Image 1: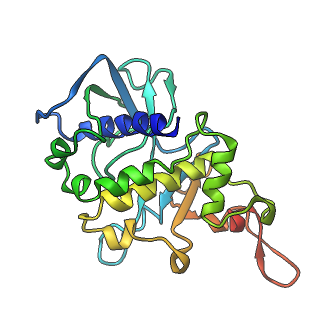
Image 2: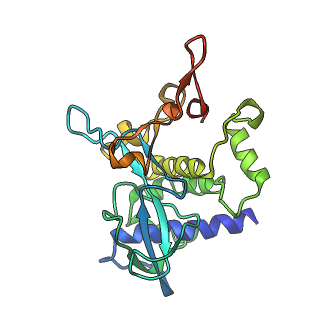
Amino acid sequence: MKRKVTLSVVSILIMIILMTISAKVYASTNLNPNLYFGIQEFRDDGMGYAIKNPYDNGSSGNIVGAKIWQIVKYHDNSGTGSYDTGNFYCVRAGLGFNDTTKSATYNISYDFNLEKNSLTSINPCLSTYHSNILALVDLFYLHGVSTETERKDLLENAGIYEEDYSAHITDNEIEAVQQAALWYYTNHDDSAFDKVYNNYGETKSSWLFYNTSQNSQSDKNYKSLSDYDMDFNDYGAQVGEGKQR
């Protein structure tokens, strides 16, 4: 079952990249009916995520953050009607949609597992890290598809045990981290790679930032997720849900 799930998700991954190559023709499968995808900054719980603060361009003017958009599938091509959230991921950060009020039409798809050579012309990183990406996607937790056991295994393999925390890691947060992990491979050739997509690990623990739809009305800047619901105990140590998450 896990392999079937993976191949299904991989097909969606490649559809997302088509937004950047509409003028080129490669081996593909025609879609009938067409699919319509768009992006949203905030998810169903009102939270939006980013790699660092996407509004902080640094003293040199170079981008040091990126929003982790939620990709949605619209029921028509209006970009404003009803939609499904599904398990949709963007192969390449920094390309594609630039308007959250519009949708893009997809009429062809690629099989990531079988069409490696065709994908090389789209993005060299898709060839260089093809095996890495397949292995990564095979580990993804898919909301509504993966079991609770698979979710627990994913977290425990990352050293996160439920009994050690009172805060609950949300599916939206898992999805955001999985998206960032994918970009780690596919954006290796990006000039901002070391400052944005290569920010992870013990010494860079505050790489995942957040904002809320409510707060964005007055402050667009994203803050470290560790600062969410921030509080301090009697000894002056930071505690709270955000620190755990």
